[in-house]
Length: 545
Image (cartoon, rainbow, N blue to C red; front, top):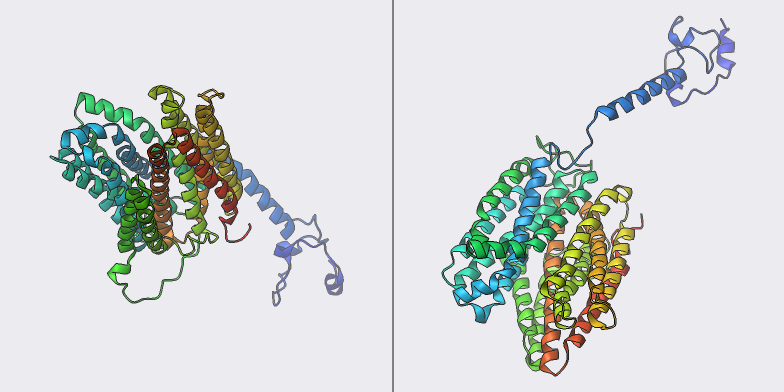
């Protein structure tokens, strides 16, 4: 056995931090595991280094076995499956009512005496959408998503029932307005629920499913609505949805109720999101006057947007310009109060996510709205052939979003500026190819269909990446605001770009111009939005990460 002096002076191989003696630690008694070997060193039996290696080896052998028996996590498995189906079904139903009704709206207006106010059949829903989006986002941040989703689905159901039983056009418009409130609430809360109920690694896949839940019904909805109207009644387009609304609520609401308020930890039965530090409670503040609340500002935003759209429908420039300018000014002033601070200045982070949603939807839907018109009027294709372009864009949007959702893990916690910018660039190429197919006679008309398939893929990638990144950065008690603001930007983009394109067509016809000129201006504007998105993508994160 080595002497005490030898034991203190001999330098043993460093076994690592776990084997180092802490100050004040007692020397083990003779016969302990640390002194069983007369020659301490890396081969000593029972040394801390060897024990560490043995334990590590044991764990490494156990991990593959555990991995082999563990089921891969999926949004379609417990505890997420019911909530997943509830969210997707809810989004699909409001998408059907938003877009699918357009096929039977002429018949409804004719039967109810509303042809002179036909445009309000769509505008009533869109303007109410703005209010529902803001109100639901605010309520979700205060109370959690369950309560506002319950109210949103209930209002949507009442709107469907009222529209389906409407005896005249004003009653039908009232039903459409209530539907719009529900549409805004459901779409805003879908993203909020995903951010609060799902772990980070599953959110991108859920956002992709929501994109499909909106896109596919918007595509097939018009045909389904036409079949129902022909074989049942146009009223069935609204009334037959009521049982499905009940099913969606039954699937989604129980799990959302268990979440509690945003930022609450330890709610029993709630899916465990990725660990984040809960924000400190906000200090109490004085009550905000009702006219300054987000909901009141959203009503003002809807009024300003409605005035803008009404102005854009006029043929006389002397009336169109001032009326549209006043409407736009009112809308912008209200927009400052219902979106995150810094949105209008493209501040880094969530505000940029809101701006990117506006640019994406303005570029995509602003182009798509006039693709059928160009193919039918300029290239003399049938409505069925023109519809191929819309179908191609919808399909590739879903594919692009699905790919991005599966590949998103490589960007988790980091800036998704690269896929966002790439998606915008692909969308820009798609707009250019589509415009060539529509506007240039020397180019085959179906080139426009191929171009829009390209654009749809870019839209799917950029939309999913931007949404995931923005929601990832939003605080737990600001998920409703972030989700509602992005949905608000989407609704505004569709309304404004459709209105501007429609104004271009109307003014061109009124002043001796051509459809070709109007569509050239429209596609140039949407291409500019896509180009702006490429530049803005780098601001999606506060710092370069």
